[in-house]
Length: 201
Image 1: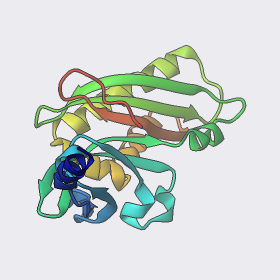
Image 2: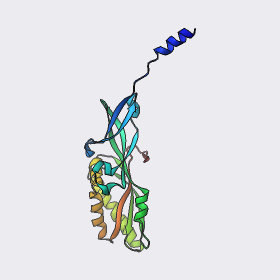
Image 3: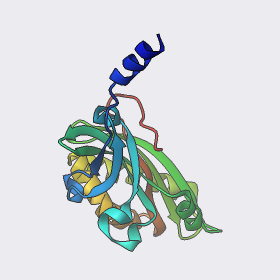
Image 4: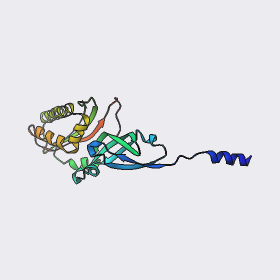
C-alpha cells in the first residue's frame, strides 16, 4: 500500500517556474520595469505595478510621481503592460502647502478622444489668500483647460504630455491670467474604462 502511494505521488508533475520580464508600454520605450518568477504566466494578467516616474524618464524632477501599470498581455517570455494611473506622493503634496495661501482640491471626470474615462484629482495653491470669486474662477478655468487637453487627445498622448510636464505648464499659463499660483498639479489620475475606479496600490 505504501509503495502504491509513493508511485502515485511521484507521478505528480511540478510545473517549473520561469522568470518573465515586465515591460512598460511604447510611451516609455518598452523599458523593463520588473521581473516575475512564475509557473503559469497567465496568472500575472491583471496585476498592478506602481513605478517611480524618475525610473522611467531618468529625470530627478520626476521622483515625486508614480505611474500605475496593469499587466495585460503575455508575449513569449515578456509581460506587456498598459498605463492605468498616476499619483503624486503624499509627502510632496504636504510640502507644497504653505501658510496664508489657498489650497484648492478638486475632482473631475473627463473622456479622452479615444473614449477612455479619466478621473482626475487636482491641486492648486495660490501665492496669497484670495477671495471666493477668484477661487471659483480658478476652478472653472482649470476644468475647462483639462477638458480641452484631454478631449482632443488619445489617453496615451495625454499621459505623455502629463509625464513631460506639458499639461501642467499649459495650465499654469492659463490660470496665471486669473491669479498667479504657487503650484498647480494633478495629484492623481485614474483610468476608469468600465465605470469602476481602479484603486492606486
